[in-house]
Length: 298
Image (tube, rainbow, N blue to C red; front, side):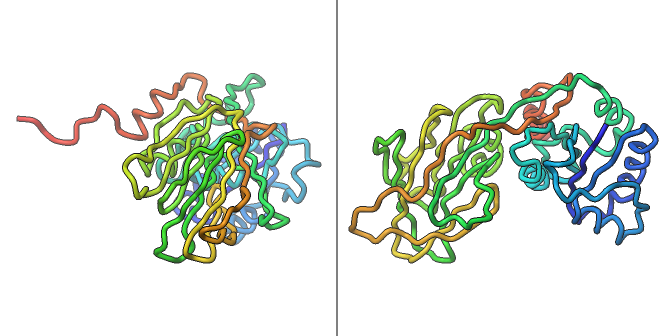
């Protein structure tokens, strides 16, 4: 079995556990492949190398991918996997960790799950983004969200939106988020958007600090085409795709402007390995502390 590992370089507190986990993988006959930057980080911290540095993911015929870090690391691991749809297992060493099912305290369970030929996989919807101003080498997919945001200015944005070619609204706000069900518990949640079951096929439009209380979050079908053009007194705005950003020029106020960005459901998914016995309701209770008393009643 071939396992590829992607991790971040801010895990000094977990290095002994990571070293032990890598040793157990090797003892169980698993071939370990490693992303270059994570390999460099481990070698700088004197972790003995028992892996192969993976330069070209597509050519390695990987069976499983392991992400070690938080949700941000998982998002970058999904980009690393690309369109291959290889299952990704998340080991959480971050904060909330909605995308990661396991911890480094569960090495025996992790080895068992990795070696099991039958895996519990949840296919998660990706968004595909088309935009003429996107850099050529930019990965045009989002597992969490696409966000239209202000660019170092106090001027609000006017995000004009269309659904399937039909005009929807002008969102006068600090920005607008278009989120997947997976991303509904990320940036979308922080601005008051709804939580969706992550296996749904849907998109959520949630304004960021709207300038009208009538502008509310909206859930649309997953096969919708969302288009947007952005107006502002400022010259530029930012497009953020799972935290990766590029700058776009705003449309000129008072003039017509064709859609600048088109968002649709991608033709591939991200396959996330989940605990066989877990359910979304349990994840919400544990991560969001639902049902836990915050004060002591007399």
